Image 1 (cartoon, rainbow, N blue to C red):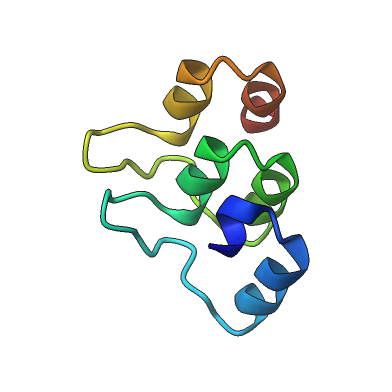
Image 2: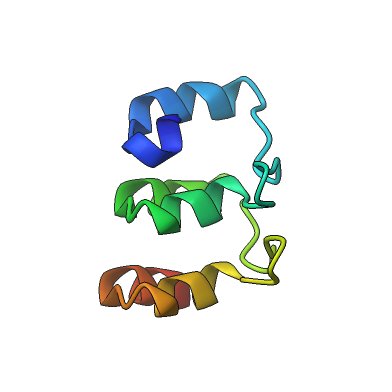
Length: 82
């Protein structure tokens, strides 16, 4: 919920309390995949700094980069390629 709404402050608190960067929702999406889907660029910048993996896949084998490309969001694609 915090990720999809872009509440960076709440996300920082959760990460300090060891919230799982590779935890998954019912669709198999990690927090990074959820942030990409919600187009939350601030969150997308934050998660890799904390160790979120770029190679994770959801239940339909979609990676973070593929998800960004599919959403046609150039800003997020550039973030992921940095």
